[in-house]
Length: 114
Length: 112
Image (cartoon, rainbow over all chains, first blue to last red; front, side, top):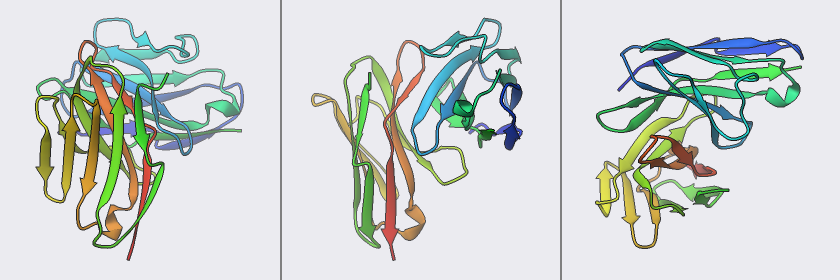
């Protein structure tokens, strides 16, 4: 299974600022995903980030608010822009093992916006 | 529009008992059905998964039962232990995009 790390693990930010979350995988993967998990809630897909193409966003999420980079097959970043308290959530990246269709998740980044 | 419905929302089971969590899906364009276990402060970890051409899969104390005609699948945890106390999510994978659609989650508490 893929080993995924995320930085930072947690952060407390001020309203109106931006935070970039990094996701690093220990193997090359084609499909990478970013999720949001609000407190006590399920996981909601933000976008799919495949290397070599623009990220595709789910309904309710826009590139200006959540720009994503995918410079290579082992790394991606998600930026949460112009933050408000409503953005306080856990942000998770995941990767798919193309051979088994299994998605593996990183440990998450716990974001609190004051 | 919730395409994967999970129940119950919470579950309390005595140690040694059987925990059962149910999920139902609305779309037939799913090709893979994983269950994830999540502990507080951690990311979801794959527990067990099944494909729609199989009716049951067992791994240790964990069993998935799958009913394709009813569009339902369930997780059974046999001999439940306090260490199983966590939140469990079912999911369904869209065959054309690889996206996972998650259920609402079930918080399981196993009492010693």
